[in-house]
Amino acid sequence: MKKMYLQLAFCLVALTSFGQTSASKTTPAIIPQPVSMTVDNGQFLLPKNVVIAASTHPELKQTVAFLKNRLATPTGRNVTVSQPSASATIRLILNQTTDNAIGKEGYRLTVTPKSILIRANQPAGLFYGAQSLVQLFPAEIESATLVKNVNWQIPCVTVMDHPRFGWRGLMFDVSRHFFTKNEVKQYIDDMVRYKYNLLHLHLTDDEGWRIEIKSLPKLTQVGAWSVKKVGYFGSFAPPTPEEPRTYGGFYTQADIKELVQYAKDRFVNILPEIDVPGHSLAAVVSYPELSCTPGVENYRVRSGEQIMDWSRGAPPIALVDNTLCPANEKVYEFLDKVITELAQLFPFEYIHVGGDETPQNFWEKNDAIKGLMKKENLKNMHEVQGYFERRLEKIVLAKGKKFMGWDEILEGGLAPSAAVMSWRGMKGGIQAARQKHDVVMSPTDFAYIDYMQGDPAIEPKVYASLRLNKAYQFEPLPDSVDPKYIKGGQANLWTEQVYNMRHAQYMTWPRGFAIAESLWSPKETKSWPDFVNRVENHFTRYEFAEKNYAPSVYEPIVNVTRTPDDYLRLELSTEVEGLDIYYTFDNSFPDRFYPKYLEPLVPPKDAAMLKLITYRGNKPVGRLITLPIKDLEQRAPKKK
Picture 1 (cartoon, rainbow, N blue to C red):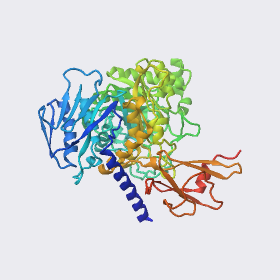
Picture 2 (cartoon, rainbow, N blue to C red):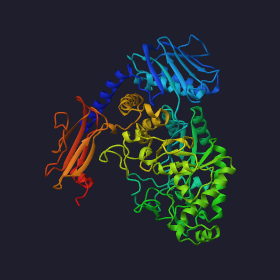
Picture 3 (cartoon, rainbow, N blue to C red):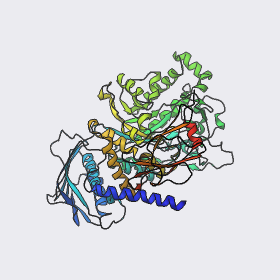
């Protein structure tokens, strides 16, 4: 059986590689789709000696290094760099007179049979033009080693391109599971290939405090470490006292400075998030005086055991008090120290302070909270949190930064200068924009890339799903709001169930392609069939780059209903057109010689298992999916 799976995986790679390498030589497959692109007559063939001409502007250094590496390593070409020269193979030119059509981050790319020219108003535009240029080459260009017998040829094109939104972000949760400094750099390298310019680092939560605060050393001495657990996060047994708390880590301030510079060199801003007043168990464990609940000195940093009851939705019912106490003056002294050091480390204009999913049940029975409510004339717990947020905002503003939080911060009243990141759908963002707050859209409906992206039978299990097709429908700008308040959007990768970098890649790509296109490309040019063709090209590129990605888009969508006489009824479909679905109920392994799905299925009376696989022509493209009939019964709506 193991050999069969290996053969199937090989067929998938071979099919994608064969079909898309050929396609990439004739059809440009740039993600995100440029504003305009004309395919001209002729081809450019990469010569044996390549000269990149660019000025010595310090912000061009990374663009030149990127091009030199990509054009030399897999091709074996000799690539040199020169001062500006009309005879160079590739010319990078900063405009002397502003080209208003392309703005600060746009570029113009011209490929002729003899040379390549990239023009931009700012260095960022040349960097993004270089990303598009590399995507024109055959997929083998992504290899980290020499690839022989490749025709390094690209079509002649004329491209004019610029972003639709200025805020094009990915949120990377490094708290639930810690990712090293070098892994964060790798994430930055991956995201800039698709013209993202904002990395939101979720630095603190119940599972770990990940940034050194020198004035508060226990935050990382204590708060950065937990007991290692593997399995389904949220269902682990509570750690015993003797289990070692050695799992985790944190970034020193030197690490943060290095990451900030690394990102800046690639035209990425880093948005730090300190999630308060909820999601603060790591801080409370480190400094129990930040709570106003007795007994918190016995708490420990969460290892994945249940600490919240979500049966009634959000806000949850806390089983332990993971909140900072709004009625405790020590909390504001603590936050002043944290924000002071954050503001010195991160040059970006905003600091994100969380504010989401704050449980209220411990506050509701706390005498200190009741006293605060009476003193400040606060009517409910939302207004208690609103009081907290306004005081925190004053601290943030005093450090020369702008205040941002999740959309819950709207519920207790908000100062005019606060910005809102809308995650509970688009509603919070619309409300905030109508109140004239700046907004970043990151709704669960389209942008939560920690969700499953295919059938739960084969995906790493999470409580919700988000397929690629749905992510591609992300539209950050609602019709009903003033566009000037919508800064842009981002996708969010929460990492409760993400244990390592390979899994982070799997969850991010290809849905990260979809969000990138929604944030960069014109709304009216988006096309799902065209996008899928380009995604398949980039799958091949990821094979050569040895990066992980999710092939879930190839796999069947199973819709389970019931017949009038209460039998299961299974309707199968695919996100990608032109795929055939083959199935078995007899426990054998389907291929294209088995029954092909043509109409809804009713499982045979005693069948125990449905197995599915998709083909394109005579080649398998999807993974084998095994669905126990008992599991399908649980998905079916109950007969009334």
